Length: 550
Image 1: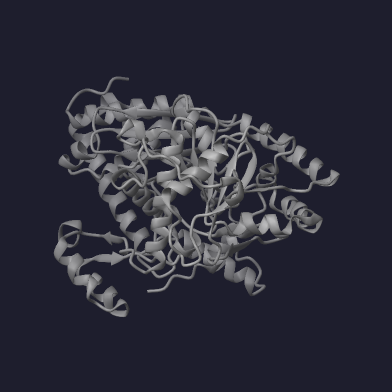
Image 2: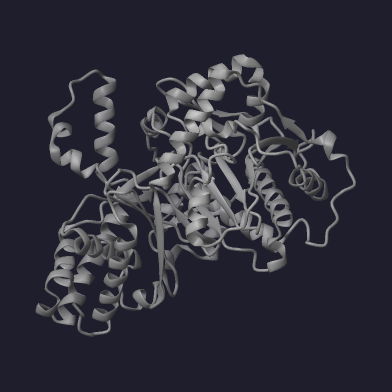
């Protein structure tokens, strides 16, 4: 089954807004369980080696496909995994169909490495050069490259990689007066024009090195204070030490706190999360170096090339303007989070409630409490069960969540715990149906998106539906939500997709629920989270048959 992803790439690549905050999300790793391995140099070396091991496994065609299980009890078993391995790929879909488990499309993965988004007027381009063997390292706004693969495609010795990273970390030159990285935070048309100037001004070769690098490793010179600081740093930072156009930036702070910040046009959370999980597992279970390891005795000053960019006045002005815009925008972003400890997946599943539906219901209740209304809500869902599938939207705000939210928020005393439980079950059932429909390509958002795209491509006048205020409203997603579940992820997040919205990254863990929310001045993330917490308390009270406190 094939999905047409072309229009979706166009949608991302034709957008002219800055990719920072508007598109690029982040996911942070939990610390290495062995605390001494969180030393910045040790962790940077281990994660780099593990990332290259992943690249080699991927290119050798040895990466097992991810599988989406509609009925995990039947298919998430060793027997199924053994069976599906021997079915030719052209037929494996049918085997999967029989047990309702679908191997996921992996066509996005090749853009994970050696790739970048190039700014172009009107529509950007995705660039990949799989022949390149060097890593790009950013520190204090300086750019360095060195080979991590040799001529035969083997990984360079871990102790050499460690030596090169140590050499970079010991460079005492001051931060550049005009940090080039700011340009990747600009409006895409502005950046496209400046990039032309940059290339024609004798920087073509240095830019090619940046674009084709296996990936970008960012070494930050400060520790992370708390989870809010972590979110700000990994989502946007100060703009000097990230190359936001790169398919991903692996960021490692002074205290070893690590995260992946990624560009969204080439791929979705599913591919990046798989990579993150494998890198975490490999770097913690089979680390290439230990904190006691000695770096190789090698001349890093020869192996490591520091890239120097020649900047004329127009480029310096461009960088200063980009910095001003970036600083002003970032100042307006608030991030806050809660960790709800009363229970999670285990407890909710025992109650036969979908954990995701409960989190989504809490967001509806919270917004109703805070602003007195129900608004357009977006939850992303992967459609990678289809060839070249990207995402579909789950629309969590329904007549069921509205009825349930109003009962909890407006008139809790009028309903018995049993009635509230009944309403929650209805919400859960309906949410489960919506989720399955979305995952199986039966949502309406991408369908309408494709029809609109076709009308434009064929020069047909835009059908009236698209001019209807309701269509405008449902696509102005005030609550934009996304969930990722992994034991290796500490926290993830993204900015609101509209100025008066919330960006809600959340995860329902076995025994707790985490929620990381961003907002701009029109909305209050802190207050919203207090309402989410109250909503979850009420839901858990109702489940336990207690009265709801007003």
